[in-house]
Image 1 (cartoon, rainbow, N blue to C red):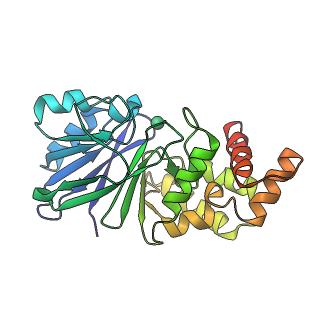
Image 2: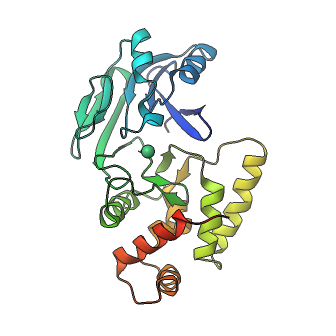
Length: 258
Ligand SMILES: [Zn+2]
């Protein structure tokens, strides 16, 4: 099992530090949007940065790269079709990141929708999915279409049940409230909401989640379910195909206030 430490940044971002299975003091930072909290975490736990992985070009994911590289001469990996700092090794689906010295290896998936070139890293029973899949939610469609995002989420949802889902934001409670608006009779959503509220009340992270959990509570992974289809069709006032169901609930979420 991978050892992964969250570093909080901004109001609700998580920068993940993946510990090397060979030497737990060496870590890989995923989406360091801010250098200062990463430096602090490295100093506090006497960790050494070994590499940087980037999922997409948004500033809250890449803003700390240049500053980190001043102090740490480490390789940077990022999406092939997006402009990100750090002169990265450019990756697309089918590529792999082999950090042999650290004992870490990840496969790359293209997951467009939130941004056009967004990628995810899969390996060691975990997925680092940036702003594509959140616990009980998904990223907004800034650059891609509903069809692209639905395809990207389907790709992620095909990962094994016990895959740990490391998303980049703490949005779970508000996402679950939306999930209940879509599926008021989903008992797991209700139970999980209470669990996550309690974790947040103790200032604990609700993530990582698991793919099994996401398949059960995430309305964006459940567009094939009759409950979600009915809720979306009631909202739209007409019959909908699978992609339209996704588009309607994504739009519904955009305007949703719990
Ligand atoms: Zn983003």
